[in-house]
Length: 73
Image 1: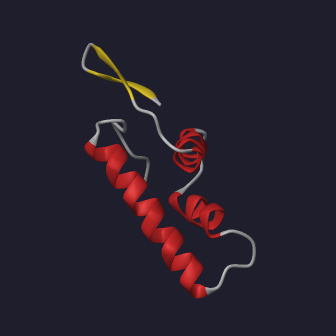
Image 2: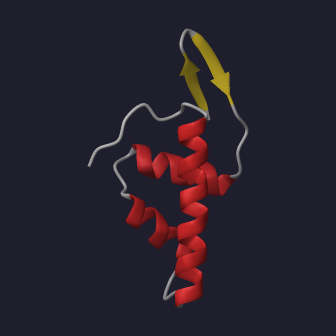
Image 3: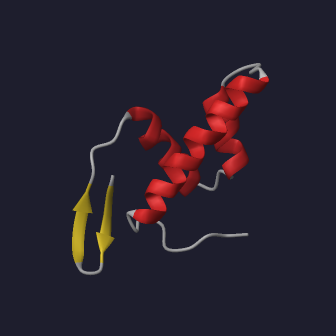
């Protein structure tokens, strides 16, 4: 993933799941969409909770790294 920190380009190697999630959200997917994708087909409650935690960790990382500059409500 490539982004800018001020005038400096920044690069990060990420796993396929993170790259796909970032691309989906960049394309307009919602947090709920991301959780659903990560949870897989016909998930049980534990799979949904795990997916929500993973999605939250990704989003938190993106925010702390400055990869996201704004959110749409």
